[in-house]
Length: 145
Image (tube, rainbow, N blue to C red; front, side, top):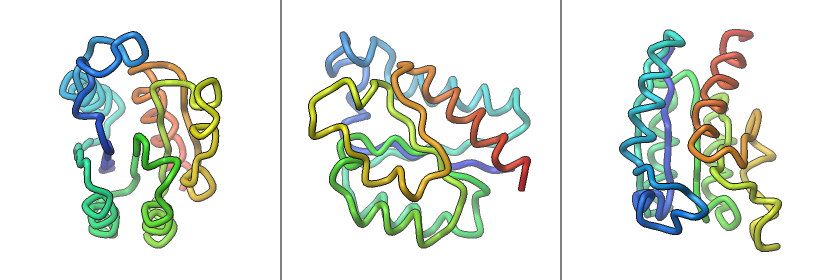
C-alpha cells in the first residue's frame, strides 16, 4: 500500500510559524514521524510540499495509478481552492484531509473547507498527531476496499 502525503502553502515554515498554534516541530520532523508510523502500519508513505496551488493539483493528478491513498494538509488552500478540490474529485483516490489546528475554532473564514466534500474523512485539532491519526484512518479506509 502506497500513500502520498501532500502539504500545502506555508507548511514548510512549521517550527518557525506561530509555534503557539503549530508547535516547534518542523515539517521534516512531522514527515519523518508519518513515514515511520506508516512503516509500523505496513504502508509506504511518500511526502510532497508546495506553496504553489497548480503544482499541488499536478501532484494529485499524477497520483492516479501510483498511490492507493492521499493524506492532505492543504493549509490555507483548504478554504480557497476549487481546483485542488476538483483534482481530488477527478482522481477518485481515497483522501483524508488533515489540519493541525481546529479550523472551526479559528477565524470564521477558516470554518469552511472546500475539500471536505470530496474527502473520505477529516482530522483536525490534534497538532502533529493529526497527521498520524489521519494516516491511521486512511489505512483503515483502504483496508476495507
